[in-house]
Image (cartoon, rainbow, N blue to C red; front, top):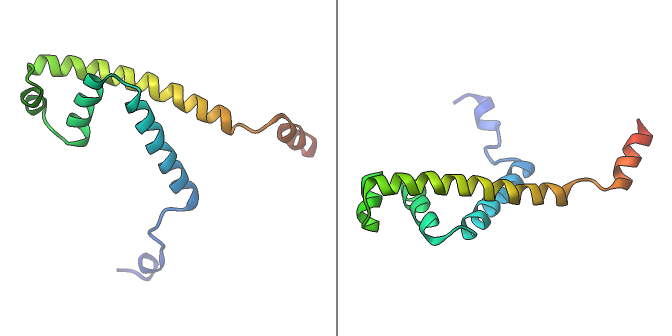
Length: 106
């Protein structure tokens, strides 16, 4: 290993840690808001890394049904995640006084 590699702090910086925690929270909230059948297929496929065939066997449905549920669940998760992210971004937006102060400083 080089001296630079040994001297570098491998821990993420504070901003990366906060963003990672916020992303995990958003994902958890988005998954919790989904119907059980959608959440179930997403967790088995992505988190548990099961194949479509394995998920089908576990749920007692056909592989085609798993694919269809995955497609619908992805669309639902995307919409739910974006809606929740929009709320977070809205809450974290600077207030009018801050924007006015920055504008005045420029």
